[in-house]
Structure formats: structure tokens, C-alpha cells
Length: 80
Image (cartoon, rainbow, N blue to C red; front, side, top):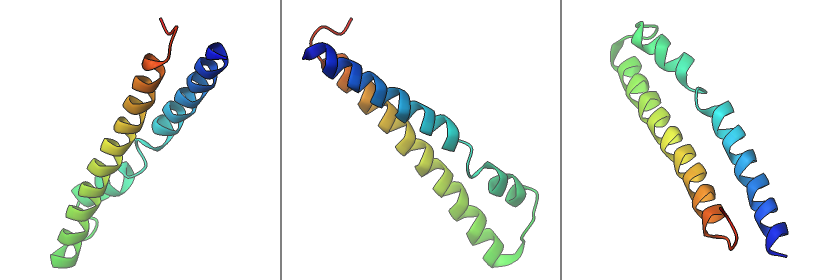
């Protein structure tokens, strides 16, 4: 049973890592456009600040999800 749990958790970790890799760059185009002054003025500045904050939050959450799954896998009996 422990082997099945380990394999299931390994599959979960791989899926989380794939999703993290796929979404890590999701807000980059918007951030780059804002860095290039695609939208100026007070509203543009607020949007630029928010999209950069959203990117940092997204990346933090993705990294935490991967780390959590890695920790869980490492905590299972028989994991080497």
C-alpha cells in the first residue's frame, strides 16, 4: 500500500510541477507590455502595479504548491 501511495503522490507532484511550469509565465506578456508603456496615465500605472503584484503572487503560490507536494512525497515511508 505504501508503494501505491508513493506512486500516487509522485504522480500528483509531477502534475503540479507541469501545471506550475505551464502557468509560471502566464502574466509575462502583460507585464512586459506595461513595462513598455502600453497603457499610461494613472489607470495604466495602477494596472501595471496590480499585474506585477499578481505575477508575484501567482509565482509564489505555484512555488508553494510544488514545495508542498515535494515535502509530502518526502514524508511518505520508504521514499528515498
